[in-house]
Amino acid sequence: MTKILVKKETMPAFTASAPGKIILFGEHAVVYGRPAIAVPVTQVRARAVVKANPRGRSGELRIQAAEIDLDAPLDSLSKQHPLRRTVQETLNALSVSIAPACMLRISSTIPIASGLGSGAAVSIAVVRAFSAFLGYPLPDERVSAIAYEIEKLYHGTPSGIDNTVITYARPVFFVRGQPIERIKIGAPFTIVIGDTGIPSPTAAAVGDLRQAWQASPRHYERLFDAVGHLTLAARRAIEAGRTRELGPLMDENQTLLAEMDVSSPQLEDLMRAARAAGALGAKLSGGGRGGNMIALAPEAGSAEKISLALQDAGAVHTLVTTVGE
Figure 1 (cartoon, rainbow, N blue to C red):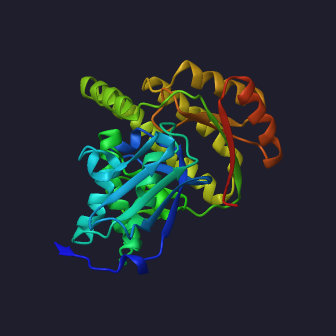
Figure 2: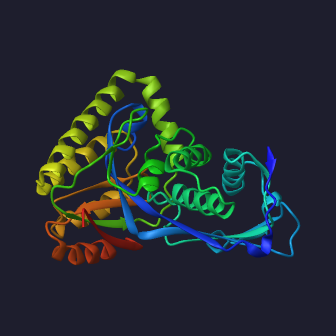
């Protein structure tokens, strides 16, 4: 490991941000080698700002994150705390032992534990801001790899899709262990996102599903295969611009997710409300059992009606994003 020697007063602040994300098709099945489609949600972002602290001693780093009520020296956090691990993994990637004294400020408009990729977005913003602050911005591939390691702390056995789509900020077709494929958007389409306000326990949902799969592998492999076929059909429809076909595919995907026991009454209520308001299809997005659902609007102008219906049905937040715009 090397020691970076830089005049702290000459180091500018560096800022980086990363978007949220939604999974359109394939969550949970993607952990078992089936494809998934995910898109960035640029209306919400995590942001990291690193600024030198000329009065601090070498290696001293203070971290502030108002959303989680954190204002403390980094070394006061557990060694397995995601933020401390993110900084340490960045230092390791650069073969740096001691960094200049600095302040790291984190903010985010991405709801926590909602399926929008908050944890991965924060990790990616921190890695980019901190590595650039040190003078050695890491390439996307390394940024994504670090974020994936941190995802293990949040989710246990992550698929890698969150860190991938957020790092590259492009719609992706993702199969675990295979090269990333970007999706061509044949025609824009509008998605309405509804937040149940209930934290989505991704690690628990993934762990419970793994136990169920181990107890009945044939049954769950059939479910995962069916999700994989739907995802392939969705990719063909997206690339051909046949966006209305996505609605029934979303409904079918949701039926399979419910059979995997990762839905919830609150999610189902929001999906019914969305369909009644004119949505062409709806499903949960992410870990499930809480967090967010998504609905396909027949056209951009109908998104507001669906959004209001979701709020009336109990959504604590709604968000409209247009894919391919």
